[in-house]
Image (cartoon, rainbow over all chains, first blue to last red; front, side):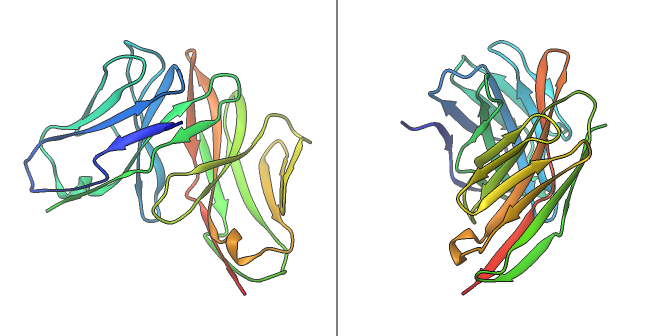
Length: 112
Length: 112
């Protein structure tokens, strides 16, 4: 009964380093999303995947790449981290019939 | 472009003091308006979905209503455990995909 699982929960990077945030859901949902949340800015969509094998840009995609590895997993990659990418990242999956989003616990990233 | 504006940004209430949070929106092709609750350090949790003007949903001390331009989340006789950030989101259909757009949230603190 895990729902949406994100790893890691916390990460500190130096400018220029790369890393991948992992997300997996066990609810058989087709659509998955990556958001970032910054103080006073709300949740902003980075990328989404409507179904396995497809990905599309959201509001703030620059500096990120994604991979929909299979129906369960949707990863977010920072190729060359910048201080502006310091944020809390949330992965979510969407229940098709109601539109309800299920969120992970978040990944807190600091880029020095 | 879809827009969601929540007000007020922050609200402090005494226990038992009823109030309302506002979510005004512009979207073409509304496919649902959602309310979520977010506790500090956690991912958002689903509260309600509203689909058409005039619709109302209730859960414990919370009641959500919807018009063609805005939604209200009414909190009746709040308790300290209702303290959280409340997020509003609208979902539009775009080329077969569903893109949820979030407001910046209202931070609610209920004092005992």
